[in-house]
Length: 191
Image 1: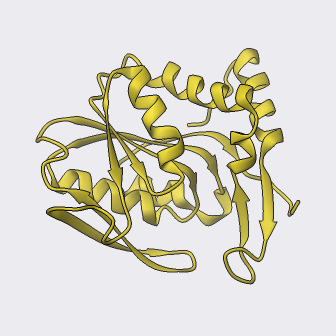
Image 2: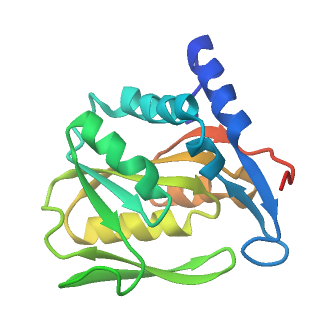
């Protein structure tokens, strides 16, 4: 599902989309990197982004917002505070002190791993996974696996942008999880 079902949402989403840029050959040749840091430079667009997610999740009884390092950290804490949930960071290896559980996964340009503190979520807690972008869905699937191994119930994954050509939505559907995005990417390089 994508946002923008009414005119007010569509106007906000178009304004958000106008703040994004695409950087070619980053982080390596052949990759078009969708940069959301330009969105963060526009306070109204940034607020509208958070508000659209809060409007969707404030009545869904979510107790955990899990943000994926690093750009999920830009949106997740604000959403968590606004809906009265705790924020759980899902980090790259060796960034969290203490006991962690890990989940390895394949990216569109390599492999990686996510870690979470043992005890960060309790069995039965309802979780929302937040990141800036869904491409192949590998990172979101790893995040869901990590939370579900800890006993959480993942309600949905939420991203600012989806790259439909990379079929991440289908991968999430195979895991039985819905994806909510504000923007479907149809971008050209803008560097």
